[in-house]
Length: 243
Image (cartoon, rainbow, N blue to C red; front, side, top):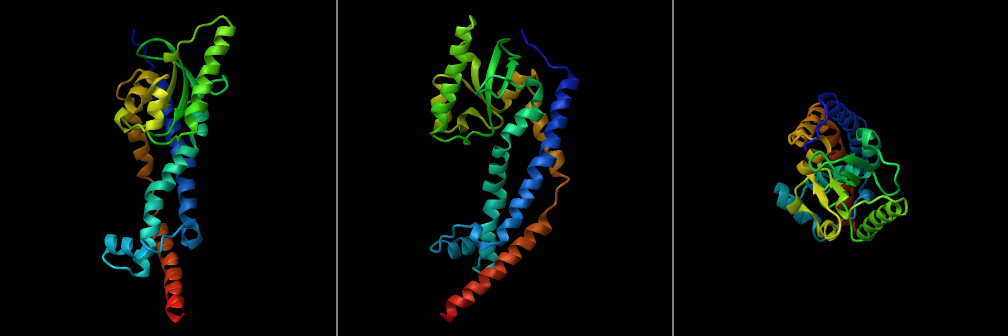
């Protein structure tokens, strides 16, 4: 039996997701970018810094050296970390209609594919947990199953799941695959299909985030941050030469 959310319920999630991106992700990303004009924000590898600037931009000018530091942070680790750090807010607000009161569980929902109630921990992406998270997640699930048994209920291991918001199963880290040995890890399109009953919802959600992205243009801020860090690097280089 395929259960299906109605159109309004799905649109509510999409609208909440856009608001989440607009009010929680973008402002944090901007704030974290502004910090990068300070060299102390970086652990600079002096053996590789000039090489990376030369490799990427064809020269090792202070501006290229600044870009070599800033761009990987702004376009990679910074935004990914921000997204991951906002997971609790995402669950409480975007997925508020599924919020769980069970300890260690983010959301509860009736699986739209198999019709079984699922107890789910939500994670951002396919490599956003570490080794230490594995036993913690398994312990939470064991606790849910044991508590249910105490209360005369039966929850199967297959109904305690980790839901990963984006990616594909083949992209999962070894840590997720370790969890998957005992409890299913449901990823990306399949997770959203099971949650909403709509096989296309994942693509709709990506499009919703893209609509908010169209509102953003922080290129001037990025240029300004690069120039300020470049000025500092130039002064640092001058001081090194004088010494």
